[in-house]
Image 1 (cartoon, one colour):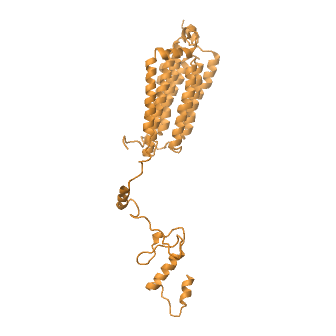
Image 2 (image 1 turned 90 degrees about the vertical axis):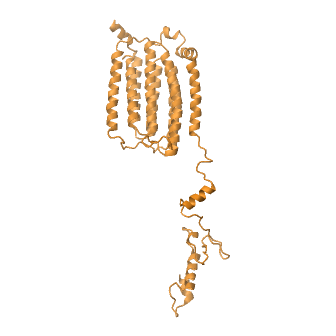
Image 3 (image 1 turned 90 degrees about the horizontal axis):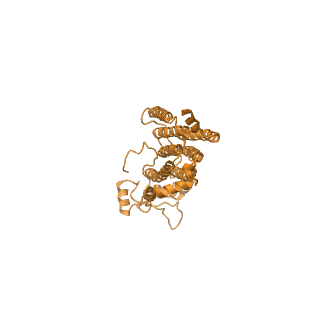
Length: 276
Length: 99
């Protein structure tokens, strides 16, 4: 009896082959996802896992779920993940620093324990289970799985199905509310706040920088502004453009004030200034 | 090979997802690990549907997918808004409920 049941529980060779191809692919994708440093690589590994799972669903007589898996998960959800990854920045990868000491080690130990527990329980409890299968007449009624799933959703599960529509609308509205940024108000301060911030010392100086002094003789921005005492305002000068006018003005001011280098009586006074 | 192998694969995938949630610090990768766990459970639902010859398991898997899609949308929006205010996507740096 037991042997007969186990014989009935084995699957066809084609399904076994596809399982031994797709299962390791799914496992490799999952492992690659948690071991990849780059978050984009993690997302692509997860896409591989989900594609393999979609194919496994189709092998297991769940074509509807298989296609929904591929279209919704790998097509929509993972692309959403990739979009958010690009928005957040690809370099926002993991820090190697362990905040809790030994966390990785204990996570690994607990993971192995969990795997042993679940697989052991599953393997022991399902050792002599008859595979009813969904390909037979009893499950399908000769109409195929997709039609039967549609009938189930719209008859037995009609109320939960309607609830999912409410859930989806709520999620969409919630995402819009969470993602909305009022760019008009964010980061724009009123003039009063700006003035107060300037005098509180958030900026280098309370007033704007002085503009260049444009005289009747020159209209270049290299011309310096003059302070009330006639000296050159250094902040009016560009740091990039060298101002010969400012140098000349400073020298003339020094010579008038008598603070400059003393000019000898025998020196050729104009020539010396030209030499500068 | 028996259909039980699918359940073993599902258990392993779930475990890998759980370990990923514990180990990874990037909020988006943690989220992807949660998706992996949901997928593993879906695989077990599909397998049970096949073992029992009953389509209710597949309908459950369908509902899990719908809820997962809604959850992803809201979760990613939360991660984005946290990133906007804190300039980080690491779960270690999010230690305040406000700001």
